[in-house]
Image (cartoon, rainbow, N blue to C red; front, side):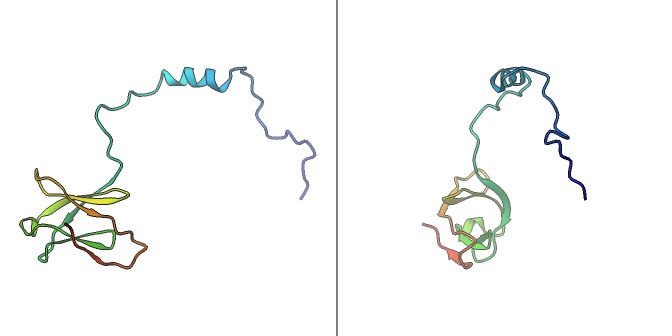
Length: 109
C-alpha cells in the first residue's frame, strides 16, 4: 500500500467566501415555519387494558381505573411519568418505572 504524500489530496477547495452565519441566513429562508401549538416531548403508544386493569408499557405494568377495562388507551411516556388516556377522559398519571429496573407493577394514586 502506498500513501499519498500530498496532505490535501481528496479535499474539496471552498470557492465561496461566506461565513457560517451568512450561509445560515441564506438557508433560513428555505426553512419551513414551526407548527402552531405545543409539542409534547413524549413517546406515544396505543396499548390495551387487560382484565386486571393493567396497561403494559416498556416492560412495566401500570394500573388504571376499572372502567378502562378491555379498551385501547393512549400511553404517553415522558421522562419522569407515564400518562394513560382513555377516550376524552383525563389522563391517569403514574411515576415512570424505567426498563433497566426489573419489571414490576406500578400502582397509581
